[in-house]
Length: 336
Image 1 (tube, rainbow, N blue to C red):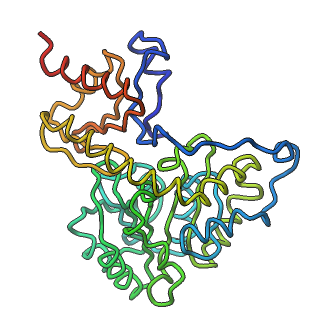
Image 2: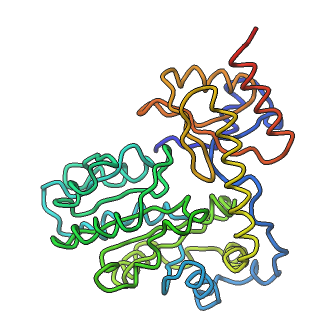
């Protein structure tokens, strides 16, 4: 299995620092997540029912009919290759943006000889032959964004030979203007688009494991068959519905995240060029491993990448955490 952020217990053991003494910036999860309401007792006592109000609330939030609830968008990432590449030949079947969330390329490793890695500049070239083209918007880890108009043109090119565009919008709730969710239902523009959404990042509900696939009916049906019954627990459905319905919290959170990500970028600016999304900053850095280790030795956990070399920083959540990060960065930069 691939490595991911959030392995705080491992870091505590590796560096000999107690769990309570860490500042964990490794995941890109909103540190001030949705305030979970009190849960009714019956959601623990009954099996989840898929005819509750979750799908209708999610449809209104995303602007797409019949979103398919998932146990996190990871479930769809793993199942989509079999759904979208059924009957594909031995030629290059999938193209995946690189760098990007590693699970996408990993999911296609056994299909068509493995995925072709493409860059943000070569999407249009890849669309001419790929059976499936996969990207994240905003991209993880380098925060690259793609205009919807460009992605729709790529989808049109893919459609010429029966290809699919898969857009992972796990970090997309902070920038809804970039989303293709509303295009999934539109004939001619959405018939070959699959959008993945997650409540783990923007809503800070990673532990609930809730995501959605926005896709044409045949793809939703095939995914549902592979994932099986009760994909989302009753308590998680209850919390997800409350979060997706709370538009006031969503709007206030977008404003706060925009402010906080700009603040984080300013803190990191002395180290070089910084790219940012609402939920994390990306610092390309030649000796990223040394920087990552120096921060970890001081109890600040970040996400290390080696291809390309860089460090991803999530957002601190409290004034004390902001002050600690500033102090640690100053100490690492000028240890004497």
